[in-house]
Length: 322
Image (tube, rainbow, N blue to C red; front, side):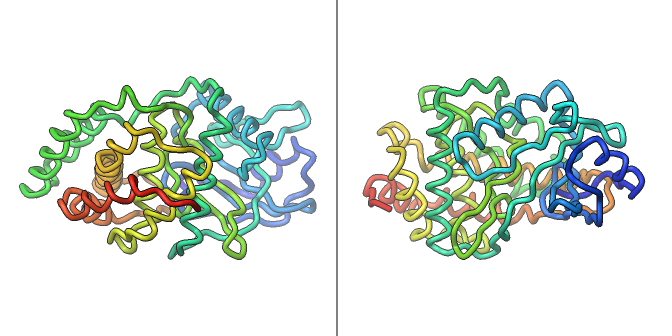
């Protein structure tokens, strides 16, 4: 949620005049995240988030807005789109698709505790359960083919050591298909800056624009790699807490347990490559947040170690209750 597109007060006043959300008092850009432009907008009726979509098209976005509306009806804590006077949830601003959401209370957590990890496990399982019969037509664009495409793009910037590690991991991942694992709607990007907490209780899940139909276990692995690693160092207790909380609502199948260490590696590789691409080919913008690629290089390296592999196998097999 960086700021790639600058808007002016007159543009904002005109845009909000189409809604019944009050008059604009103030607005400020949000620097967290890396995909869309976001502003906090305060009006005479409350606080809202205005999102300008930098990559998703007008044809794609209705699927995401409908998903958010479905999740809201299922009591999942997520931002619901606000409709204008003509009942439109999607409009245009500065030549780009734009939508307004009620701002959720709470703050992002920089250093998660065991309790935070448990909350994320519970909410992720709730998401997977309430969408188990939901048809979401957006497919994942971050498979092995995508990894190879990004690798080719950034290859000239890599050290020989990094290139060897990536090649080796790609070869390893190619041996393990995910076709037989349970699939459904996944968040795809449930990092610390995409969740809000009030007094250690989760108050909101944000940024569903990486959502797609994919392997459910991959979603758990993506979240665990961020929430359960301290400055890039695997924390076994946090991994165990997140998994136990998740399984209190949705039990993992035996095949999922078998693939857990592999999916952790796949998730780490994906975000290492993604961050490298953002580092070497940054998008122009007014306020851009860059995230450190080395964090996921370190996490991937740890997941590849035999001791860490053994620990993950024990964690997922010796399930506890949340």
